Image (cartoon, rainbow over all chains, first blue to last red; front, side, top):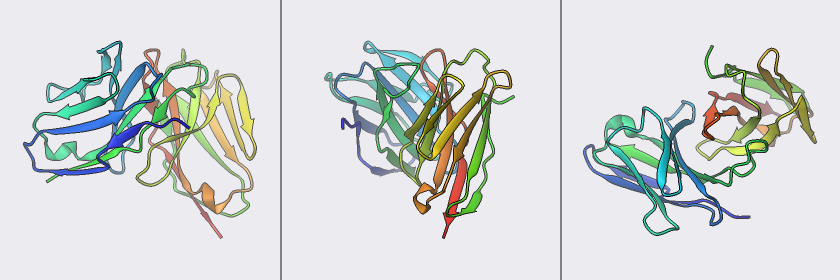
Length: 116
Length: 109
């Protein structure tokens, strides 16, 4: 079964440092997403990406965040200057999006980001 | 009303029990709905899709009441392996998924 692959699985970084979270979506999917989940809270949408540009972003996704698809296979989330409150699980997802079935949505196993 | 609202639980039930989770949503235009399962510190995984009045898959039944903007998930004959958090999810018209806070289920022997 095709998978969305995320690396690293766990990243510890100092406050103020830049981090890049990496994802390899399913190859024939066209829509890519980042979600985050702070420990004990719900999964929250950050950003969606289609046709090499951001299609939607949440209010969480401020100027500190950026996304890129540098080489046609990887999809990255960059946080420029990390804050303690950025500590969370970050999930990448990709889909070929069928609104009726939702079955096109696949999540990666996540990157646990800890900012110290 | 919150976009997606669930009872957080936890629901503690013995093996073999039947348990039901409820979810309400605010967007009356929503056409499809999902139940995801999430194990501790893992990614959400799709359990069931609901886009008409209901859906059944083995021990799992999802029902939709559009008039009340209410979705339910029923699990029959609970197994220890059903212990997880069950997430009610409603897609937005722009394809992002809106998650509820989840309902935690603990099945004990």
